[in-house]
Length: 139
Image 1 (tube, rainbow, N blue to C red):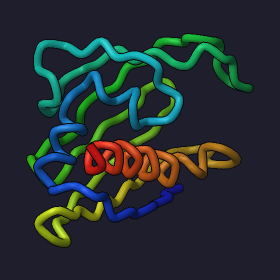
Image 2 (cartoon, rainbow, N blue to C red):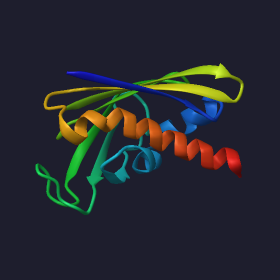
Image 3 (cartoon, rainbow, N blue to C red):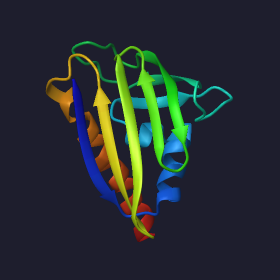
């Protein structure tokens, strides 16, 4: 199953890319992640990051459960894709400049069992990216 969401962000595409390409920012915009331990390759294709879940348990996960994220593609500043192994999710983020200071972010999530809260993952991630960019734009 595949679910998509798009949101126009209040930031230039290179600035949005800088947020996506910084492993330690993942917890700021991807729902359910509280921490990241990237490998030395950072956001390069093939990189493997250890990710830590939230403190609260869910129906299928214990608190602070660890998983692996594998970067599938990184094409600055337009495409970032990764696989979350424990969740069996493939995530693709495409960035398109709509104006010098605006970026359309399209997030697609593909995987089994996309029901309930998981159906909202791309929309929630797009909203969190928007919030990050809005905060930076207002500074």
